[in-house]
Image (cartoon, rainbow over all chains, first blue to last red; front, side, top):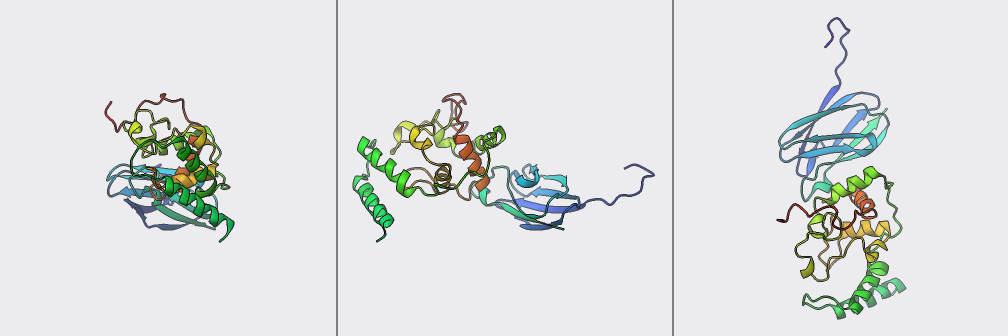
Length: 101
Length: 158
């Protein structure tokens, strides 16, 4: 925080809970160009959330919380996957992100 | 009956006739029939292309994805190094560097990883690994490290 500077709007924080083998919420809609902080919380083992096309990858330890700030640069639908192998349903653990104008 | 269906039926009958319950090594003839049947009849998806280029990053990702699950039977090098039961399973676990495996198209390798090969020990990994991970594994399979260069899977005492 820089004192005397004009207060800037904090990026919106979006909490996502990861548990074997799903994300909650399973779908998100964001605006292109609007910065957000994704807060990933694990309620069981280590997980991750990666949107390959958007260059976003956040990993979280067992029972922990971790965050990443990013600004969606393009519109469209993007499917994020768990990026830390977490067991038998790992490959089906997805979150769909809609980026709109 | 369509010609393709007829081929499937004939191939299935030939394989059933050759199938035994005893885990002895397959004969050269059995291996030839089954290999040809897999390549030309049973393993589909020949034309699908790998959406990822084989960059060093993608190959490294494939190696990582391979390390969770596949290494239990295929070893860290894809060539069975350090797999304790490799000499005691029939049909045998192939070296993934072998010509019989490498002759599959990329799409077929994806299909084999997705669906497995029944009734061999190869399980399907659809749902356990994501499509992205499986494609990176296909890239890794095309660039396997030298046999024995990666040590042995951690899961086995050594």
